[in-house]
Length: 244
Image (cartoon, rainbow, N blue to C red):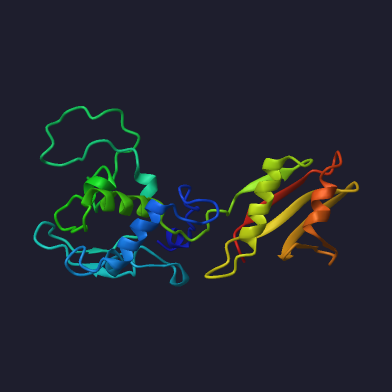
């Protein structure tokens, strides 16, 4: 348990790299937080607390009373890995007629026993009271949960090598720099540059707006690095590491 609790989940691959939400995901988020009678006892967030600053990603660590249908109470689960359970086709339930549902990617879905194959089916349980239009709002909440915040921002782990002035690479470098400057509500990444400059190994960290600093204290501007990368043999690799 101690080892498992020390593991850090990866960034959510569905969330946009700039950490934004699509209009549908944002609509789902609004319902998640603001529809206070969606289960009769409060909002989705009432039980599945989402507060990254408190390291809560779908649970506040409390227990839930499941009622007569389930004979055991459970700790409210976190939702960071909801996207990873996609790939089960057909719920495993006593009411199944045994029909072949297709090749399975995963055999464990949602709920305490993994019996529900999709979030859409899970949210069709009568305990949920989605506002009208029901189908659209339910689908939007599914989209938001699939893009749920995680410990690491989506940009963490992203990398691009700049070799010349290719527009696509320059755009990605600009995005990495933009996210590295984010400090609120929490830092997103630590941007590191490695490569060679004038034949010597180079390792820098972005320390401010358009400022990169090496271990020896030397500073370079982002423009200077872009210009240097045009020369053969001076390719520079930009990597977003976890903040800290």
